[in-house]
Structure formats: C-alpha cells, structure tokens
Picture 1 (cartoon, one colour):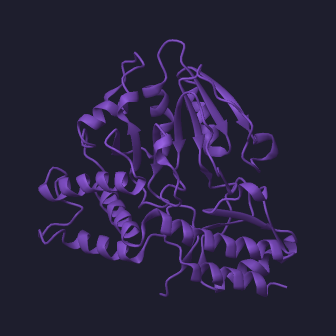
Picture 2 (cartoon, rainbow, N blue to C red):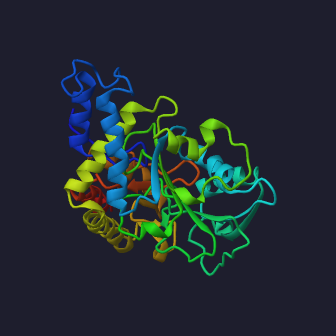
Length: 354
C-alpha cells in the first residue's frame, strides 16, 4: 500500500525516521533482546530515555534549570484540572481565561470547579472565528490561561499578552512549531499527539518556584511537585509514547530546531492559504489575521461540488481532510512532519476542481 498524505489533526503524521526507529525498538530495544513494550521503566536504558527526553525539551525551548519537564498521562484534558489544582489557592482563588475554542472552553469548565474564573476575552459568539484582543489581565488573578492554537477553528495566537500574574498556556497543537520566547510562560502543557509524538503522554513544562503555594491538599497523582520529585516516574510512565516523543524531538533538533521548522511551516501554510484565497470555490472559517500555521480549516462555497472534491482528494491519496464534526468543511493539519510536497498535492486537487 502506498503511503498516504496524512492531514489528520491528531494523532497525526510523524517523521518516517521515527516510525522506523520505533518499530525497531518494539522488536529489540537497544540490543537488549527485549521489546521496548516489555522493558522495566526502572531499567538503565529507559531511565536514559527519560533523562534525555526531559533535557531535550529545555534545549529546544531554550529554558533554564528554573523549569522542570514532566511527561504525564491523562492528555491535555487532565491538565485542565491539574493547573487550577496546583496554581489556584484554596481560599479566594481567582483565575483569568481566554475563550478561543472548544478546548479553551473545556479548560474554563474545569477551572470553575476550583475557584472563580473570569473570561477576559471570548470569540464564542462569533463561532470562534478570531482571537480576542485588547483585554487586560491584572494582578488580582492567580494566573492567566490561554490556548495558543485552535485545531477545530484554525486560529492561532500570534503574540501573547503581558500580564501581571502567572502565564499558563495550552500548546497542544503548535508547540515546537515556531520560535517564540518560551521564558515568558510559567507553565506550558501539551498533548504529545500533534508535533511531538503518538498519543499517550502529555508534556508539562513548569517553573518550579510557582508550586506549593495554594494551601490545597493535592492528590498525589495530580501534584506537579510530587511528579517533579519522582522525575516523572511516580507511577509507571507511558514508556512507548515517551520514547517516540524523544525520537521526534531528536529529529527536530537534527533538522535545524524550531526556527527551521517554523520556516518550513510558514511555507506550507502560505502555499495552501494562497490557493484558498485565489480559488473562488473555497474560503476559510476564520479571520485572516488569526489564521493558524498548523490547522487550515476551510470550506467549499458551493456545496454541490462536495462529492466531486471528496472523490478527488481521496483518489490523490489524501487522508484525514474532513473537518471537525462540530464545524464541518475541511481541515488540513500542517504539523512539523508534513512535507510541503503533500500540501502541493492538495493544492493541485483544489486547482483542478472546476
């Protein structure tokens, strides 16, 4: 079977080198005669994997030892609760949230279970077609939470506000895709299954000094400080996803790091957005100034062309192009591992639609 052009929003495309090395490790990890799937997480070989997987994140993000890196379970959705549990005081806790999409709304829902949540900006009434701007976040809040990229609606924060409190960001769908100053954040979290690895682990990067100040008796599995003390091994970690994530980050480092990835991502997005803007049969769902480099959500203007277009992109070997069920249309996810040649195949199909 020929390889598909995988535009899925996640779990998503990864570098071919990662698939190959992961497959080899499943059969025999480091010449041990054991599969990666059966080795002890306390073994010397896997401890080395975990150590490097944590170290490479700080190298790529250019962060000091003031930050700790964790690999946890539960997906980014668990972080919707872990963030307020660890950062919002038990008495009179108050946080500010930016509502830019479905996942931001889910984070808001969980945050309200721990204290007062103020939504300082929202584009919900306009179907999340833009990123809110011109809001302020004062020091009356324990933290400000935002979502950097919105996979469903195809919007992305191009800059982050200066706030007088802790800055927390869900970067699940665009971490490692563009060069920004990561030191402006106090806590970052991201599900692995976009730019980082397969589903099954979640990256958390947290500034150590912000923890332990809530007065809460935090359950062990939800306590960042305990996971830091145990070096991400308080419980058995998701061994395979962490190893595959390490391979993905090593590939990123070897191919020029985040800055080089950003240049490639900008070229891919420009190619596709240019065709959408040129072609009278297509349009995006969101405002131009807030378009995502990672997830291009678009639709046909003439729905009578849908069957023809669907048949054409499927015949071209394209997979995962259907839009999210809540929005419809189409969604082309252009994560780091997506080659520009695959984007050109999609553009060719769009140009041939008459």
